[in-house]
Amino acid sequence: MQLLDINLNDIDVDYSKEYVNGVKKSNTLADLKEHCEKFKCLAPLAYTKVQHFSATDFEEFKRFVAAKDFVDKNLLDKYAEVLLPKLLLKVGDIMLKFIVPWSVAFIQLGRAGGICIHDNMAYDPGTYAYISFTNYFSQSDEPCLQRRHNSK
Image 1 (cartoon, helix red, strand yellow):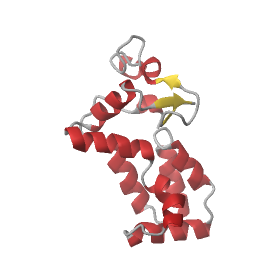
Image 2 (cartoon, one colour; image 1 turned 135 degrees about the vertical axis):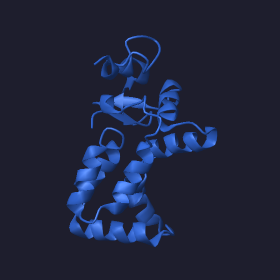
Image 3 (tube, helix red, strand yellow; image 1 turned 90 degrees about the vertical axis):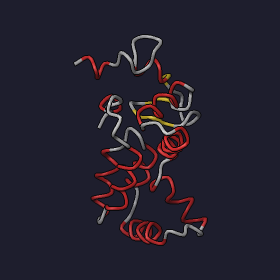
Image 4 (cartoon, rainbow, N blue to C red; image 1 turned 90 degrees about the horizontal axis):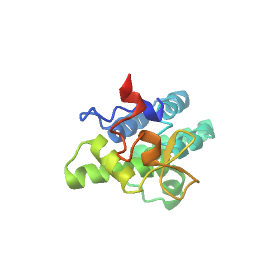
């Protein structure tokens, strides 16, 4: 999936939930890597971390996810970004707080400067030098309204 492949017009899609459910359902390291590859554009830091996982890391990660208490700070620091990437957490929080679809939360977070784009991937601001959200998704000052993806 590329960033421009995200269907921002589909109000029934919750990419945050799809990502987390897929991570939890990954039974093998290969499954987890494949899933993170699919969501690389929305969770690039998680993708990078998972690419460096060993079999031991994966088993530890699965125990971390299964424990559901998350009290071990070392494991939390090591695996939280993989389980729930910061950007997806922010979008999900906006969805719940304002009772809006994922796509609306994503667009508004981008318009407010809460998303930056680098190498066709979405990051929290400050992670990398970035292309503005508006310039990436739009040919005008209104982001996501005249997206190249929707012109097909």
